[in-house]
Image (cartoon, rainbow, N blue to C red; front, side):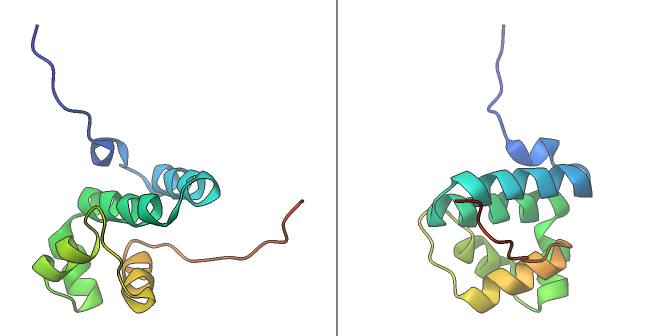
Length: 94
């Protein structure tokens, strides 16, 4: 039996799935996990498409959204807009 490596990007095939995934990571993840999640979403949509919409080059996107990267806030916002996301602040329940 042959196995393949799991890639979350293969399952991010709708806006609803992308939103659920990113919201879960935002709620429970740390900075690095959030950047990785945004990278997974960009990969699922297509880096070329995201590059065109953000005005950033594909290599710059891969670098900014790779494991351990610390992208600028402006880059994160450009990518979030390109993938159809937005940031919304809600009062905490704690």
